[in-house]
Length: 91
Ligand SMILES: [Zn+2]
Image (cartoon, rainbow, N blue to C red; front, side, top):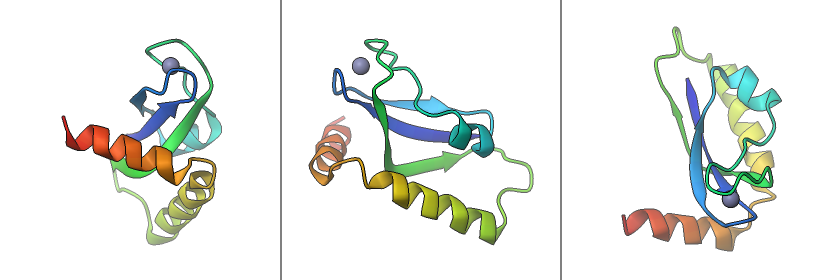
């Protein structure tokens, strides 16, 4: 199952959301922030972890997924990503 990292635009808190499938993750829009309940959340692209997906993704599916992620990355600022990364490093 894919785990995507998100950042809340309301409270700024990063969190991870576990989706049942990649298709659902793509269709599901933004998950609710577990901290403040805001739906103003944006995907953080740096980490996508896929657990136990039988058969996994084909190379073309993987390329499609990466293209989608790259597209969505355009609305997370570099500054915000760097901030999240440094917050993770200090943990
Ligand atoms: Zn929040």
